[in-house]
Length: 251
Image 1 (cartoon, helix red, strand yellow):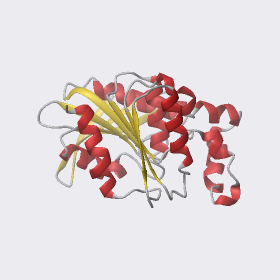
Image 2 (cartoon, helix red, strand yellow; image 1 turned 120 degrees about the vertical axis):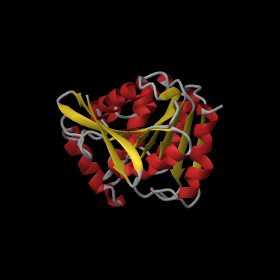
Image 3 (cartoon, helix red, strand yellow; image 1 turned 90 degrees about the vertical axis):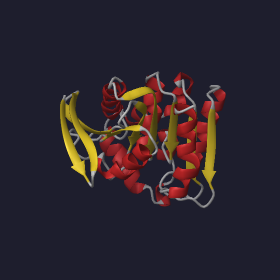
Image 4 (cartoon, one colour; image 1 turned 90 degrees about the horizontal axis):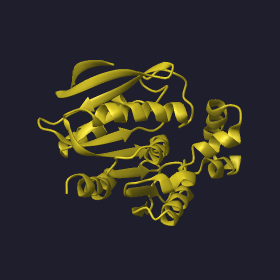
């Protein structure tokens, strides 16, 4: 593992590179002066760790230690993307292990993912214990259902990405990336956020995950943002995400 200290817009950022499977992966760390609860933020498509730095600064300003991994094939993380698949999930899990064992992280940690990042975060919390909270925003939780939607609804590009990145045995690949099938393995409270007018990922994904969490008796909150699109407003962060994280990490 290699670590570099970088100053960007007066914010001190640790840039960490580590090996996972056949490719070197990247994560950024932002810390407090004293050990503090940690939040991992997982970006969506067309972003990266550096592209998520605004979220990192906001979380740091709120009093958290922060980890911003780049998903496999994004930013400076090497390797081909596998559409929220096991190689991407393993890279994030390794970042979790590095982050949670850093002495500057004070005990409790949470994970927050957006879009593709929410699909990845949902899988991570089905495979790892030790999280105190999770925020899943505008994500895929049943990829089989999404893939079955009519191509005419404008999702042709997303479906092509699924086919290209998952490759052979598409149906099994879609299922293994669908957290609704493994919800009973989650061990932390979950906040589900989705815009009612999301054109990229239908709001039905949030309802289906809500049903899976309810059936598994996992404590959770479902917040459908009326009129909200795929990218939700800053007010949602202030009114929903940050109070939820502080409730479970700082109480």
